[in-house]
Length: 306
Image 1 (cartoon, rainbow, N blue to C red):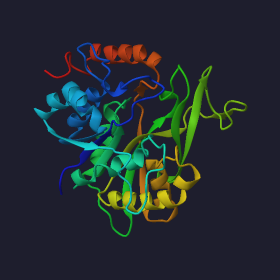
Image 2: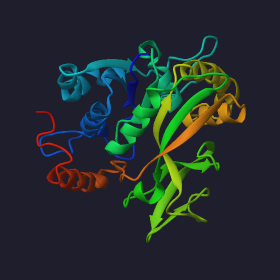
Image 3: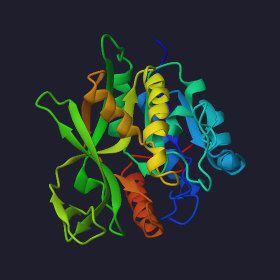
Image 4: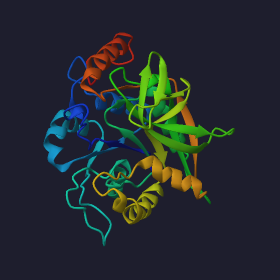
């Protein structure tokens, strides 16, 4: 079997952050968060990487990270394009927003010929998650069901002090399998308590600090690409007409559909690593300090790529 592939979603511009946060340096020698993800992934065993980006960002993206990595591993670029939609449909007038994470992964279809993992470009996952997902993928194969995995994180390890975050809150059965995932788009840390709102802050509901959440660190067999394509047609049929300018095709939604139809199961792996991310520009100094501390502890070399 071919070795697992790592797919990195880097097509978002980061509206809350205010810039192309995926290539903003956080390391002492200009390293970006993706450098650390690729470094950890390579240590786990990954050798092929697919970056999903916007075509107009290709030159900048490749200059910052691509050319460097091309010298030491296999690198490909997939372009997410709002016009890349199912036959027979059209892009709604005024639509500029990308179609979401499910569409992003679908953009990489031509490069997927083995089990693959998916991550966000602007999230720092820590090394443990990559080891867990790689070890799952090297043995992953479908039978009467599709067999997937995700790495879950402890909710309080994933919050920003500078505003709300979106997290997939996981329901896990007694066998450690994912039974459902609910996207909470506004979770905040209120004096050490995680709370979410569904009515723009009028009311808040508490979540346990130990709640397992998805950070979009998924492991899939190749068959997921067919499911993404099929469900994308349904998305255009059912969801786009209701909200043509903002409807998004989220990766967890497709997973949920496959679970509800009993077509797939998802093993929940766990990482106790602390997440770092730059959801907001104010998050950057926190990430820089955290990376510096890990480097001083010897987790990472300085510079990272020697």
